[in-house]
Image (cartoon, rainbow, N blue to C red; front, side, top):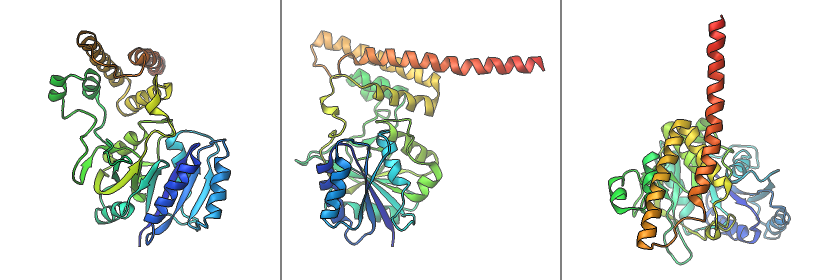
Length: 332
């Protein structure tokens, strides 16, 4: 029988993490495996609270560990991914569950059954919905230059022309392959991670699942959205994204790292230019048609300043060693 290690990452949400753990425990009844709660260096007493409650509830299948630092979503989950089961053995599958996500009936077993019956699939994720049943958009295509233009412009004719490049995929009503899934409820095959590696810890928050799923797809391990697996999700509890007035620097860092890592700095330059072009078109339409604000404050300016500074530095770093190499070859 396959064994699962469920990983729940906590950051200053101990009470909610315990509710998520209870839901996961219920859904793992009859499934071999364990749950590990990783406290991501909350420094607010979460680690002590979680330990005390796990003991009080007599949750023998649950461990609580503490990350030595808050390295973000990927780094925190990597702590759990590297632990293995408590007997020292390695699980067959890893299940990453957000601390504000609560598996519905049959949700974990649905992912497990799908991966067991589809041995060439690397990752499987759930249909995510809010407490009132409203679907959450978690199915996506990989970002590209054209998707940057489409997403920033918010213009019907452009969106129709580039519909195959649009990053969000309307929530499917059936099980299907997608490029990548948000990591609120994601089951991963051990062999896939052994081949491609774990989360890239350069990403503090955002784009880490995108990068992981892209590496898996390039290695021949697709990602599948499993409609029969349903999970209730509150969303943005730890990050506070819903209340952002301005995009944090780590979002820009993650976006730029994704493009430069996967496509190179020249591609990243064109991607930011495409976004700026689309963003200027959107702002012109806002002015003329009095449309409501859609971006956080100063978003376009922050994007331009951030990417220009980092891309110019990256280009200089890349060019200088090449010049040195040619000079050395000439000397020889």
